[in-house]
Image (cartoon, rainbow over all chains, first blue to last red):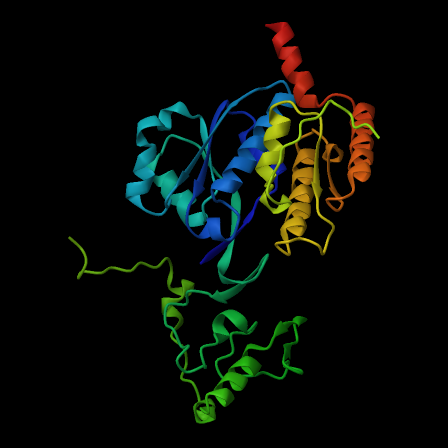
Length: 222
Length: 117
């Protein structure tokens, strides 16, 4: 899922302080699971903002709404009817949702309430870690299901490099060496023969280097 | 030992049920302070309920600090169900603390608005 982190309240206060009618807009998908922008976080942020402005003697209308998704037309359309009731929207969706909402409602200022961090997994309670960089051409079949693009600091395709010590990366003793993990997994799978095969040069044109990416599916288009 | 009569007890099945928004809403509605009383740490019937509550109270305190209400107005206590006198002692302690801090800025702001109207 997409991992996001809550923005500091003071940053959001600073963005919205000049508006009087504000909608705090949550998203029911990834940001709900990573506890950054779901219904609960919408309630907490709205309450915090209301309290802040009341104590400043500047009471504002702060409404709450959480959409099923902010990255789909049909759910964002739910706002169409009362979008004019608001001077500004704070979206707690990932960067995708914020942009999609901004594209749809051109004249309503829209502010992000979270920092979108990465594509990751919920490794432990309160711990989310990166697993994918959406490079556009997956090589996990060859690397024992462990991604050197997202988990190796150098994105080495034939690793490990000389900076790998006792299974850790030279950038930090807390970061696993992705290639150590790959070797361990290939060993467990009894597929060390794969490790000996030299990987061809990776086609990075499907990564961000090739500019913004799109997926077009003629088979599902109507 | 007598307990102060100026607070309302909200019963929950476990302090693990208490969420940040419950605490914030109490302040939004004009409460001067909120304290959560859970079981002793390590004695939770659901293992982690009171630890979850403690974390949420810490978060609520941080938010209250940032919005100018004051994080010291919210606190978590732990005791076992047989410790009535300790509950009274914690209640008195919290009551004294809130009296020392005075009314919540939310309540003051609401009162000022009402007077101005």
